[in-house]
Image 1 (cartoon, rainbow, N blue to C red):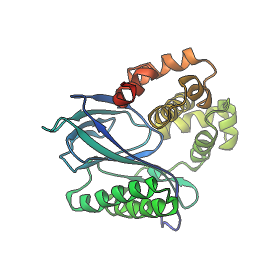
Image 2 (image 1 turned 30 degrees about the horizontal axis):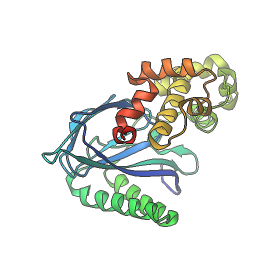
Image 3 (image 1 turned 90 degrees about the vertical axis):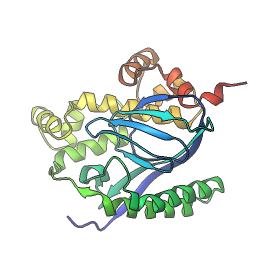
Image 4 (image 1 turned 90 degrees about the horizontal axis):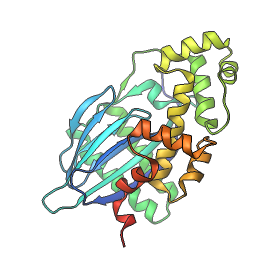
Length: 267
């Protein structure tokens, strides 16, 4: 397949400093992550991708919706600085990038300088409110990723892709299997079989995990109430949301947020 269109639909960049020894964080996010340990290092295990460890200045790539188990390793100074970009990318006006491309867990050494420079540039533009320049740097970051990424060998099921688009754009709505099957132009039984073959999850499981991933991203990057985040992610009951969130991430939402941003809760 030839790529003729790349749409960086959404981009979030951030830098944080951590001083909690061996801080461990388990999560899954709705967008691909490019994460750099500026000082200190990361020990990483990603579902289906194995384990790895960054050195100071090193970067790892975490695909969307896969569970990440990350431990922060502090340097001798006692403070670890990390920066990251979350990228939501659509190819050829139709395909989520990760349906077509896969990337290694660790950014290759020859690409590190370029990735580091662009993450720094994106942060600088974001702080100045220069959105166009930030996205311009984001596209140049994608150009580097494509150079060491590879095409997936599994063919994309176009019908399932139509249903995935409905989920990604309307995950907070009350979606039923019948609604998704209609979007895929399949009977509910045929759709269920093909969806599970393509994603290794039932439609209900995928929708639940996507909602929880979207909520996790909001917990990381906003100070909104947990009840508001739960409602916006499609959960009518905050108690059900908390129970499912803890089942997926091993922590209730409030503790998840506190551990990621320990300094926000101080003095």
